[in-house]
Length: 409
Image 1: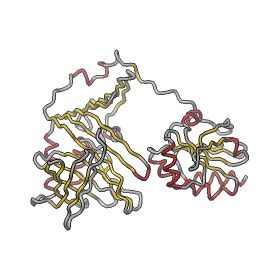
Image 2: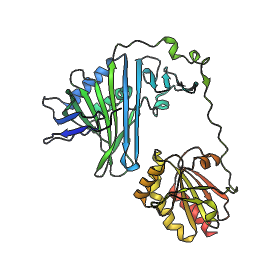
Image 3: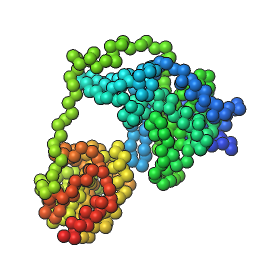
């Protein structure tokens, strides 16, 4: 896969910028006010009509995600086959192939095949809400079919249009933004709850076919506009060979594939139990040290588990120093424990937050030993090392109150 080094030339005159991220090396892009008297709503309406007329299509969908502030990068590419059907809550069924994974949605249930492990897993999905977090549907052509009517019919959504040239291909670039709102799944726009966050969308549309080429979401925090999700639709084939009817049925795979069995989890550690000692790497700029639980005997200790691609974890991190600075002098120690990221990530977050607390990593074994299943999760220990609370999520006021109560004993 080429490196993401596209050069972007922006030529705008009294026009909102059409900013986007490309992932083909050497593509030169010009963005300028539309040379023709194109209207953003008219162009979006034509694209909607084009999508509405599709009955079947096979294409490659590539999603690139970059969150600079969280040191997060992801590239995801899959070949999708989608077919319009009546008995589906989203109006479609699909098959998506990505590496060793084959994902199937027949309109009523999902099937996930792991071709390397030869396992099969299925789940009922009889309403659209059950599919909203699906990585293959997110930002897909199916999703766009729901997104466009919302935008076209909403006068509060600001829309503008410009011309873009990518590798000789002439495209419209339509910018769409509703202040303080973002697009949520299939049916609705939801309020943005973070101050100073904007989420404009950009749809690049082929001028000849009016089919989507690229869909971009930008996350603008104050003056920082570097974060984005870019989805590119390549190799669209509107007359593909159809998969065999049997390929949609679970029964077709059950003799060859074994049912997927999730790893058996230990029960969540109970209050009153004393956690055994452990030692983990402790990130420090000069050198990696180590820290053991027994070093904090006699203190109230909070073990907080996290990883960088966990959104709620990232939301919690700015509050860690607040807890340590508030209670540290009274005999409190916060140990944050990363469960999957490496030393370079620890360096990034250490430099970003300058922690007054301990930043430990390689904590996945301890995480599983404690029976925890999601992040962020926290375990609060009293001065004797006994578990007093297990928190799912990070609710700073609640956690802070519990720490204060223990210190007052």
